[in-house]
Length: 228
Image 1 (tube, rainbow, N blue to C red):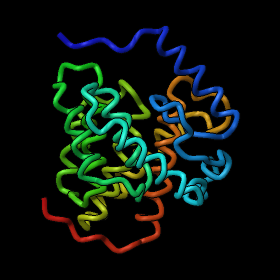
Image 2 (image 1 turned 135 degrees about the vertical axis):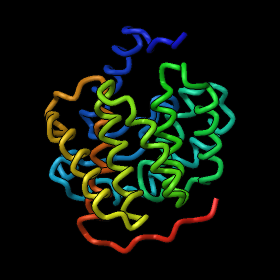
Image 3 (image 1 turned 60 degrees about the horizontal axis):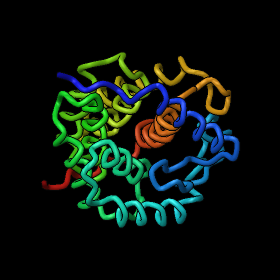
């Protein structure tokens, strides 16, 4: 039997936490109750660099995440904490440890309510490690169930686009980027107050879109795939 999503009460509590943070323009690490990195919402909405200047803060908090949550047995916490360390191209976190956290989430199995979220975290972990063929495979698993969480679809398309680019698959990269763009453009703009409970995941989508656009539209050279 597939597990159900968290209760509406928990969702309302998360939304209240999100709103209290967004007023200050911060992304929050829910489980450690600390700001993960500070961002300016307007640059992200406009497609400009908004959080790169806060990379030192990002690295500090990712180091704390790894220290505190590397051995967690809760797949949802493992997924969220791993993903938080993978949003930006370089968080300074030990990618092997973060990969173990993603694997811990995956071990919950396909019947867990968060299975596709865990698959996304695993695929993003593979991308950050330079395992681009594996990234494509994981993102295709995520996108095999589209529409349930559109922000997750946007994130998956954008990481898929970057993986295709790194594999010198230009047509596939542009097509996946276009799909991710279309999903984001159909939502209210960041900072517009209409992103609701999933605000944090839409911010992740915007950050990944900025990275993908710089890589693909900037015609940056592909990175050789790392051995597994």
